[in-house]
Length: 276
View (tube, rainbow, N blue to C red):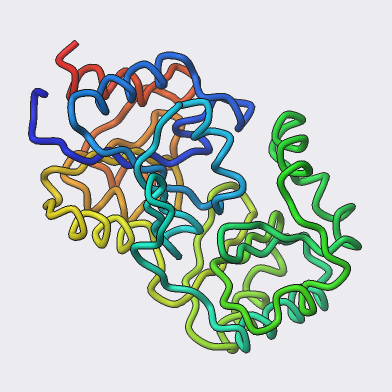
């Protein structure tokens, strides 16, 4: 390797994946596999939960760790065990479910690596899926209970993903969500809203994973493009915002990578890890 990079953490939407939000470009696959062969640990670092990550991991053919739900949990993929968790307790989660139902907002709940949408809310959610390809993946992987509260009662929640919040309703929704207890809020796309436990973010989770592996920030490479990547990009010693990313992401990162549609992750891994 051209540096001491020992851990590569990669966001998915707008970063690792192509424009369809499903396909991993072949150049990204080849570069990450080669980096793994040279001893770098690989981590998906996503706002998604495991059920919506597993397909990309299958395309890559390998993955060591997964940071899910914007840092709500870190999973050791190979050994099928958790490393870190910061979830919303059930009492608070139930209040947020009721709030989002009152507001008639399209949302999903992440819990224990699975995503859930109440069956009666599917028609609210479907128009806000990211692409036809992602819609098919989403409907295949999601569990649709008749009642979220009945399905999840007593269980801690990783994250709420609200697919779309009209701009004029954002402040009241945030205020009401914050009134339930400590929360962390972020976004991945225009007008979406993501609610996790207080203090949960990709940066905190990535730091916890690095500590677990005995690594410092200078040995960590991270890629992202949006608001839910800022803490991760600020912390990692080798951080790259995608050319298609937000201004905030570019300000947080140390370097800029080509766009996700140009396999920017693969290009930067080739240059800085593989000496290509």
